[in-house]
Length: 333
View 1 (cartoon, rainbow, N blue to C red):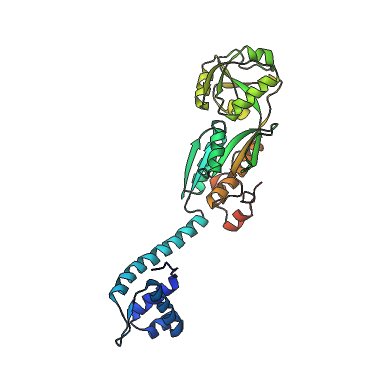
View 2 (view 1 turned 120 degrees about the horizontal axis):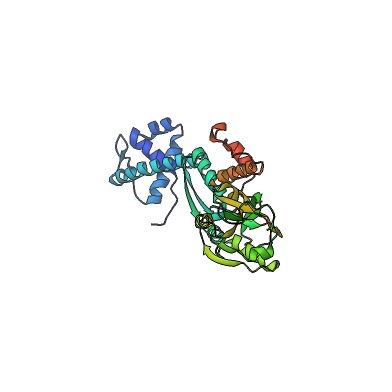
């Protein structure tokens, strides 16, 4: 039998005839003409290559094949209706999924952002993964990750794929950081490049953009850093710093927020970096992805003004008409 598309309308007509045992009564119940109803059911029978109705008696009855088909048709229409409701729930953000990639350095922004997002949209299941920026970008291009939060050198034209679009959330300054027991803790005078070269350092490994940018900074200024420990975890680096014997490079916000850490300035200054929201250019963005992008922009705006992020109790979930007008869309930056 050649495959043909069967429309729910013809199935609904069949179910009405099966219920009323009459073409006339079924047509009246559906507010359609009897010839239209009869033609639709006839086309359905032709598509299935089987007779579904016994028209020989006074009342129209389902044939054996019709009985089997109607059982499946009722279940199918139920699934279609459930699908319609599910789509509506996705549109109004009462359900859905979001996969997020974040670098360890951006955790300080991402963690409160995720908490706010899950409170605003409790029906959205979020899968947040910590990974290097290269891994985030590769996952986005393969459509395995919806959106990423990355760390970029504002002075470099980085080799980011043309398939990646980015939205700058905020600009972050970098400083050296030490633990409370380190001799440099509390120092007000900037550290020179020569002095930095004499300090033992704990750094992220070279899979991370921050490390690669620091390496370029050292090459540019003739600094030969003494790297004692490499890690892929900011938490490990912070704990090592607290022991008081090593120096690292961190965003100023992290260095000031972590108990027991002290920022140390260096000359020449380390380049500023931008926290960016990255996604697949031109790809479909779900409502959950757009809502996250909008909230991230709001958070970043609050951080740049030195005020706390938006509070859940201060606003309701924005209506669809408002969400559609906001900037984070499939059109790109």
